[in-house]
Image (tube, rainbow, N blue to C red; front, top):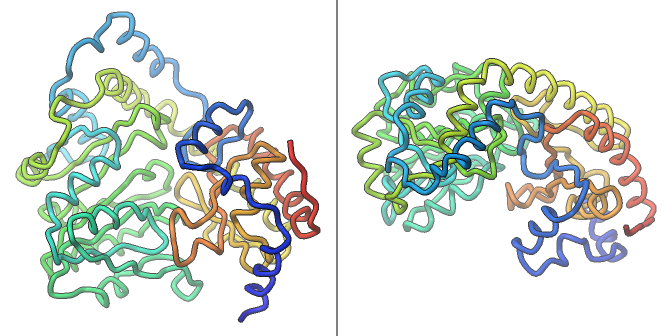
Length: 395
């Protein structure tokens, strides 16, 4: 057993039960977090920066006019659908509005996977997509990428090594939750070539693309084999409104529509607000990108104050990255709980995004006001030192 693993085992015997393990359910934890005042929200990759006034006004207008009393078009308002296609520069693609990107993922997986089929996804990654595959009787190869030798990224060669006769699906979350890297254009081209060669469908989840310096779409290189999953939850700061989209060629979208459960359309208010967010994007997006990059630097400086902690990916091309803690001897779940209990800072331990590697890292997001990141930067080294010295405090 490695020394760092031995230290972790020893620390488990001395630490009190973490706060996050005391909740009876996920719902109980979320209600606690939402009801708590002054929580610094770094655990969900959500955007808590200032929202453009026009976006808020769009919501108020729907309420004032009681438009929510009507059902929206089942596939989404045409103006919103066209705006999404334009934002992606995919004018020949069809768009289906969904209740968040995750619903879009479920619909697309449902339209592709049958019993015995095989899918490929990275580990770490957004693991719920693999669960969707398994619900339909499919099998998943979780390709391990958490390694300095691999630069902590999914590479085309690794995907080729996982392909089987029954492989149907390649899933790319890009930029990747939780590590924060974005695929290069050459990598995307290579994935597209693999899909063509082996008759695969690509699901390209681009939820975090607005945070990246440069982003390439698989749909541009293999349009007939790609579903692009679009979300308003992160850069647009509309996570609670649950709105996203499936983008692909018309025939592929029509096939996916056969697996819609909610055939009465996606939330009326959410669609109006999403359209306002798209229309004002040139105004607010540069400000968000600037502040999140500055926030990353503050976190990096704080991590460097903690011996043996490090950032596998920096700078991130998303709204989050991970802090590797394995060699510090502190479990991610313990620092997550300690930061929450004493410092009112909500972060996320790694098991949510990897069963294999989650014990190594703490995921933190930084699309929040800089003054909140400054509090994390001050608290993190202190909290790690307190855990190392068995100093526990409750609020």
